[in-house]
Length: 250
Image (cartoon, rainbow, N blue to C red; front, side, top):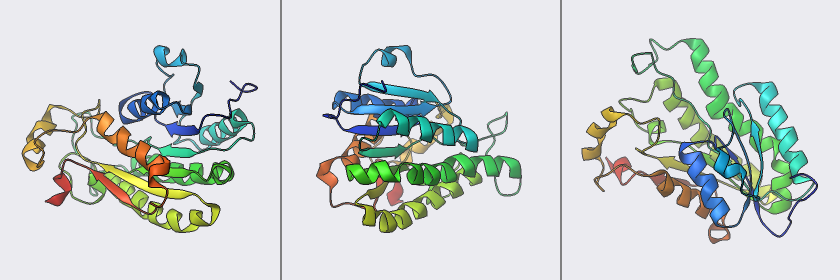
């Protein structure tokens, strides 16, 4: 907690950490002995709060500018001037109709489009800016979670989601160029079909399109994220890594 910062461990900020890919990523960083600072709309699971390395969890709505700025302020305060070694921009949303209909360019509410872009695109941009100084101190890394849907027409992901992820891929490239001057690397991970709470039975039809013959697990994504935050990838920046089981090949 603030006032008791352990400077011997590296520190990562992870958004959307209460479930799915974000939660498994947080657990992996803990397993690898990193300190973690997290946010999500929901509280952290109770078992995670008992881990002393889980420095602080801040309930946050990243689509709300005031809530996002509060998270940046509180997280930087928790760092107490110490370096930040990684930022994982994982939080995202893909709204659908009550009947789980895909919302496209013709039928998607424009207000919903703005909300999707606020969370999926502008939040990573604002967070990268908000933690730039701490990341510079740590010669750290930023990893943006994009999507296969940002590169292909997806049967279930809505247009707003897909386009926001395409924009996040472009932001990764541009940020990698600019943040290099700070000694900070910026990469992205593009998952394919990953078994999380967002995936329903209808996704089974996509498995024949996956050369490896199965959906991915959140751990598959978490391991790639960790690699891009570690010293093993110290000369890797501006790269988007596909975690799709080969689905992106077709």
